[in-house]
Length: 450
Ligand code: GLC
Image 1 (cartoon, rainbow, N blue to C red):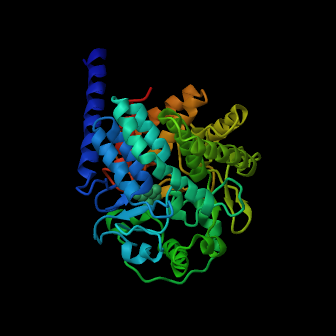
Image 2 (cartoon, rainbow, N blue to C red):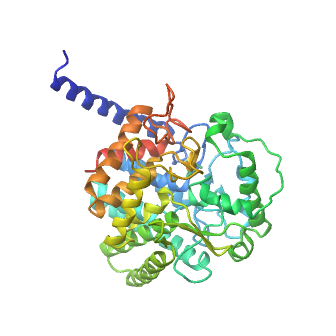
Image 3 (cartoon, rainbow, N blue to C red):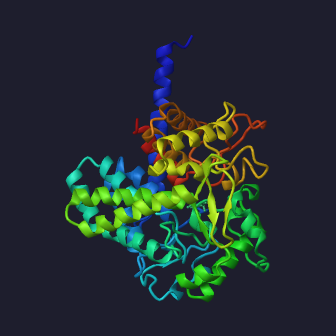
């Protein structure tokens, strides 16, 4: 008979083994060029928001790698403050669309050192620097590092507020679904209906690595490529993009991360000392952004924040895991936070499910296997865990953490996971890429955070 002590030891042993495995995944994905690929084969370059989450994982056990990761990302910044979504460090041709399709060199201020895409991803760098400071054992050394890099992040935010907010609302737009990080969310379906892109001829590479049923369709890709073509025709000029892109969205996740990073920059500049002008600017952005966010993006009837389609001037009324991300950035009032958590638990939180599906499981657009149309993503869970904890929802926060760890224990370090505890299939796998860097990195951070 196995006694209680043996079981506890076994569980602890398994956790330690998984922790070691997480480190192995991250170290194996770290490249000579000083950056980490999200997943071998499927994603062979450096992705912006992945890099931020990855740096957090490294910060717990190899601080030099964490610093290198962020330094390399910030090194790819353009002359106008923009930081691209993919930095193509190598000529690897296992990914489409690659550097030759994107042609970032069309923009006069693009990096002369690195080829990249001409679009961005959620602004994680500010809060990542702050988290690196929190984790660092040698605070003095980390503050010195932050001092050397923080202005790049500040100028990235200047870029956003000066170029991505045409109506001066304190809310910035994204011009491509890939900028959101939530690539094929059902939220974009209504926008695709307003477009009729040409049928492109190209060879998909993603579906050679991952089952096509877990990836976007060919027709969706036509839309993705067409938006890039329009931007390219205008050399990625922001004014022209704001005028002409069929996709122009104020995304709650993207704006919540910008607000979270603004706050981090304020606190880091205060720690560094001086920099009064920058702090003043950041505070002005904060009050305007938070007020507009609450006024424009909250849907009282749905009890959640939603996306706003700036091109077609209408709210996109669907609930996604991004709808709850404002908790991470301290945006809702405590009363509104309660409403949000109730919506989350009513629709996403049944006992038969893992938290937190990426799309409303009660909607007919929900698909538990397809990328951002339903599966659970660890980076979203990590943000929601911290947000819930911050607002005092200790039980829901504990469940968010527990479910994230259980999914990884059960399936491995996959890119995304089925939210159904019982899928009706005998051997449900994890979905998307395996040995996925941010799942490993944030697992490390989660187990180190109470
Ligand atoms: C997928 C995800 C995106 C991520 C990228 C690299 O495209 O949708 O959020 O950054 O993979 O991991």
